[in-house]
Image (cartoon, rainbow, N blue to C red; front, side, top):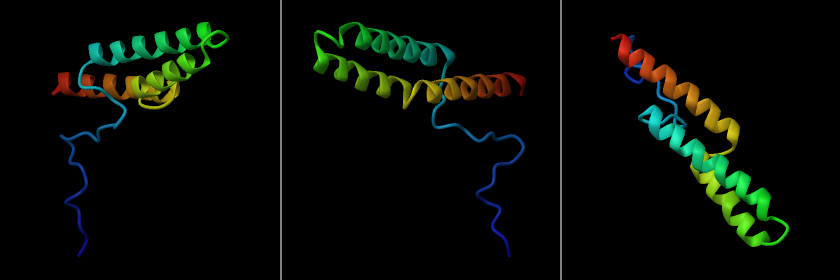
Length: 86
């Protein structure tokens, strides 16, 4: 006997842990992340510990690296598209 209870049905999408609930929230996270990345590069010569702090803020905002944020953007877009099509 196989266990199919954990498999999603056709009406339920598998959610990405990198996706956000709304597109606005995801874009705000991206703005914070890219702003932190830019700021870290600007101050790395004069304030290296501040640059490290901004780098950590970037990792939290992106939920990983910038590629993780991009994959979350794709997941958010697909989830919202699927929800609007139902």
